[in-house]
Length: 177
Image (tube, rainbow, N blue to C red; front, top):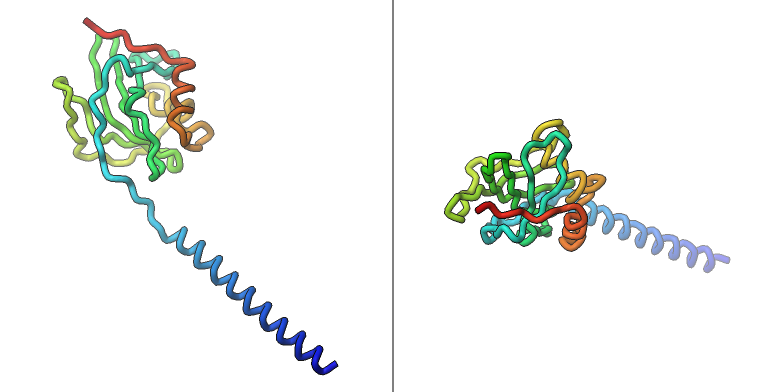
């Protein structure tokens, strides 16, 4: 009986050591995950977009500009940022091209660069992350967030899935002469 009690005591001791080790390991894992600050990937500008790669996306019934994504520039980074080239085309034909990123996790967007008429990029000077807001006018980023890149606030991890959604509704850009 005395040996059984000693044996049971040793087993309990070993089990408590094992449990303590598991708790310490789990705590270290979660601490490591929490301590890692988010880090954005270094900026790599894409090739300047070509008209044949633009597809439109729906913004709202009151939008006067038309909006297009460059299908060749779409990417989903390991940092959780969806990057794309956006074309805003006014009714009078004025084109604004920007290279942007969107973070689904924080509902933010950022402009990395703007397109120049000569087909080159100008890096944004104050390209800070800005909250995406739902509004009546200028809601192209809210439309991208809600409908294409971050449905239900969750990032679409595969470019192919984004392209399939875009191709269902999008129309190609009609080049201007």
